[in-house]
Structures are given as C-alpha cells and as structure tokens.
Amino acid sequence: MNLKDLEYVKAVAHFKHFRKAADACYVSQPTLSGQIKKLEHELGVTLFDRSTKHVTLTTQGERLLTQIKVILEQTQILKELAATSSAPLQGKVRIGIIPTIAPYLLPTLLTSMKEAFAQSQFAFVEMQTATLLNALDNGELDIAILADVPELKLYHTVNLYKEDFLVAMSEQNTLAQRDKIALDELRSCSLLMLSDGHCFKDQAQQFCFAAGVDVSNEYLGNSLETLLALVAMDDGVTFVPKLACVERAGISYLPIFPPQQRSIVLASRKHYPHLAGVDKLAQWLSEHPSLGRQLVKALR
Image (cartoon, rainbow, N blue to C red; front, side):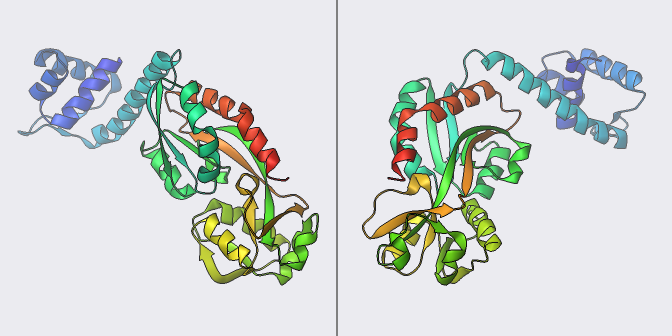
C-alpha cells in the first residue's frame, strides 16, 4: 500500500470512471486499474462496483474512502509544514479579531507589524467569537486574536497578554471618587452589557452573577463605544477591558476588587501549515513595547 494507490482510489471515486481518473493522475488506465486491484487484494475488500456503466463505490468502499481522504489531507499538511518551516507567514494572512480588541490594538501595532513581517500581507476582519471560530474551521481565516474561551482547547493557541477588567462610570456617580470598587457595590447600579455573541459579555456575566450583580435589560449594545456613551450620560455603568480604557470626557475607570482578568491569545487550526509563523507573530505581539505602554497607561 502506498499513497499513490490512495490517490487513485480518490480519483476514481470522484470521476466514477477509470480512464478519466487515470488521465487526471497522469498514468495509464491499466496502471491505475492494476494498482487499485492490488490495494483491494491487500485490504481484502472490493472498493468499486465495476458491473455498471458508471463505476460506483461499494458500501465498504464508501467507508474506507472517508479515511483515505483523511490520510491524504494529513499527508498534504505534513508536506506544507516541512516546506514552510523555514519561511513562515509568507503571502496573504487573514486574521480575525474580536470587536473588544480590534479598535484598541490595531492602531497601536499595525504599522510596525507590517514592517516586522514584510513578506506577509495581513488582512483583518472583526468578528464575534463564535463566527470567528467557524471561519477558522472553514479556512476563511488563518489566525484569530481573541479572549481565551473553553472552545479554544480544540485549537493551537499562544498567550499574548492578560488584561484586567475595570468599571467605567460617570464622573457624576458618587462611587467615581473611589480608588477601587468591590463587585458587590455595583448592585445598586444599572449595569450595561454587550449583546449576546460577545465573549466579553459571557466573561463579565460570570463574575457579576457570582457577586449577585444583575445586568440591566434596558439596553444591550453591539459595541463598547456605544455603552461608554451611555455611561458618560450617567445612564449606567459597564465593564471595560484595560486596553480600551482610553481617556474619555466624563468617564472614570475604577479597578475592581478582587481583580478580574481575561487572557488574550493568538489562535489557529492545529494543523495550520504555518504554526511556526503563528508562534513568531505571537511572540512579537506580546513583546512589543507599545502594547506594554498602552496597558500600563490605561490605569493612570
């Protein structure tokens, strides 16, 4: 048994014709037919029903074809890994990034990122977590920048940084003069939250529920900026990741006690052929001085 024989089986299953399959594989029909016969003998099964005008897979052949496709796909991944190990992340690289990170991370890093990876052509798209992971699975995206969630156990991930949650409230709020605030002190506040689909909402809700803090149903936002506009009007308070704590008129940011954090990671498919490049990009991002400065500045 060899990989060529498996390619022949896959081609016949696709074309349902031995001659057309042989042409596609650049071999003579007798060679292809003979190799498939040898493979059937070795496996002890009949893969194709040859009694009809159009060649069809037998029941056993259908079952084995599924595994044959897996073997050939994994073999191709192995070849790509070997071919790209010395030159990772060349060409177009499609990166998905969640909305609670994109507006605050990209303006800081984009120019220097393009300079550091001159052979890469980065294309960015904002997506909520569930949509982003589906796009990774389908090959529509190569890499994702997002908060760590349980579903990422199925992916190759590299840690970038940890980020504190802060409470954003109007400077008119009596609690705004505090140095920090306990979660249970927010019970008297109208807590604004992002709409469903944002992993940021799921994470924030977890520690809110633990502290007995109810989320307001009066308004669910699709962006942090919209929520912060309401906060500035003293229509409620909200949680903000540290990187998003830029100076805004009328808003104070208070550290939470006890501290609450999220982990930001770079993720890709486990069999993505440029994993070395993913790790290199993650290292560059996590060590970039402007990111560190911005995270520190958020608390000042």
